[in-house]
Amino acid sequence: MTDYIPGHSPFMPKPFIHKNKSGPTRDLIEALFPLFEQASAGAIAVDSDSRITWINASYAALLGLKDPQAAIGKDVRGVIPRTRMHEVVETGQPLLLDIMEHDSQQLVVTRLPYFDDQGEIQGAVAFVLYDDLQPLTPLVSKYRRLHQDLVAARKALARKTRGTRYCLGDFVGASPAALEVKRRARLAAGRDMAVLLLGETGTGKEVLAQAIHSLSGRADKPFVGVNVAAIPENLLEAEFFGVTPGAYTGADRRNRDGKFQLANGGTLFLDEVGDMPLALQAKLLRALQEGEIEPLGSNKVVSVDVRVIAATSRNLEAMMAEGAFRSDLYYRLNVLEIAIPPLRDRLPDLGVLCEAILEALCEGLELRGEITDAAVTALGSYDWPGNIRELRNVLERALTMGEDNGLLDADAIFKVLPRNGARQVPSALPRPVRPLAQILAEAEAQAIEDALVASRGNRTRAAKLLGISRSVLYEKMARMS
Ligand SMILES: Nc1ncnc2c1ncn2[C@@H]1O[C@H](COP(=O)(O)OP(=O)(O)OP(=O)(O)O)[C@@H](O)[C@H]1O
Image (cartoon, rainbow, N blue to C red; front, side):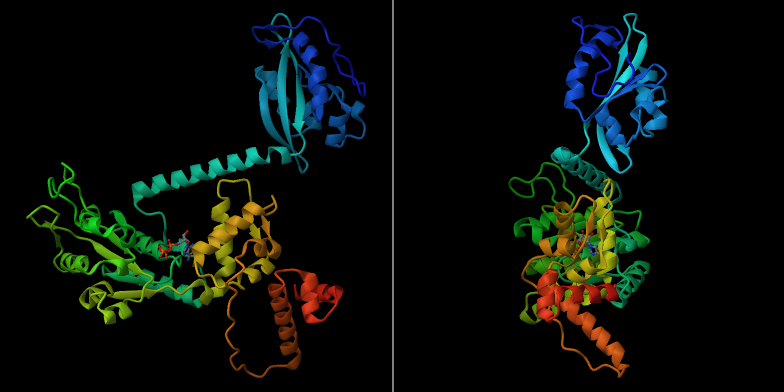
């Protein structure tokens, strides 16, 4: 093989091309080389000792080699630390597609061995197919999506075998309100009593129900959840208490266990219990009082031992007053009540929640999600009717639409935050007297934050709203950070 000559291929094309039993021969590589070299962003060749015999000018430039000629004769690993050329030379197997990092660049490379007529390895060539992953974005996104599906499927499988996927550590929050919720959850776990979880949609009622079960003495028994609102009214009874063969036209020929039987020994989580029709409320009350159920179509009672955790986003007391919820059932379910505050009432938890959610969203991906303080402040300007579920969706959208580095700043958040729903800031409470300079500095910081929120992160507009120049705004922001 010839030595390095800038702008020239190490091979001259020959008319004969063929493969032997080991793989492509030097002739074949020689014939294909000019084509590949021209189409690629760089090319290199090594001999059977993995020493560089040739490198073209574009690859030398990509690698930042000042003197490409000096690389000739060197072990390729000394020049390209992450290369896998020696593997190709040692195994004789091509590495058709690989992403190789060099400094901060990611290079898509293909590496091929070549052989002599007797099938002995002579060396290998490599081509950089892309020095920029941009054209591969659809492929990379698809890979990420598939990977996320895989992680979700694995989690679902683990959930199926264990019954739960959350423990108390998954209920993220360190505000006094969140700590009180956790304290009560631990209390509930230690006592085998009925628990009623109250909270708006997406506040973590199911997370908490699973956490209580996982901490309780029933942890190694099933956790069975049923969303009352999601099941048609005429199927609810069968769903709860099971069906015996021939119970009604179209019923299964076999016994079908209801949720009570499935949860026997463990915990039954009744989500959206406020949506339960009155007739079923009476049957549920009986089952809870007597610890017995009667499957549909059967005249035998079956004993069951379940701990019930019920949850609702509705005002059960108002429903009782209207006669839509039985008070005897309410008191049976509400032995220990845990009210989970909405996200807007525990904004100090936003930062840790974002961290935990970003970590979960990036799990299994090569992405490291990070959020700036200003972005957390931006999130605090919103009212969060969908609570933590909505926060998760917003962060997921911001990651998808944001920069590849996974860093979410205030601009990235404002791009995806719903336009309606800015938080109503409650009127200020009387505060203790403090030094004037401190009060002024706080007032200034608050005014800047408000202006940034009102201008959705646009600093020029924020400066205008504040009646100061952009440079003064930048100066003040720098002092605040
Ligand atoms: N405190 C929390 N820390 C971390 N993630 C949370 C927390 N609370 C809720 N989540 C996440 O928010 C989403 C919704 O939680 P969950 O289903 O428990 O809410 P919910 O109150 O049961 O909602 P719904 O009433 O609509 O069924 C889930 O993805 C969950 O992981």
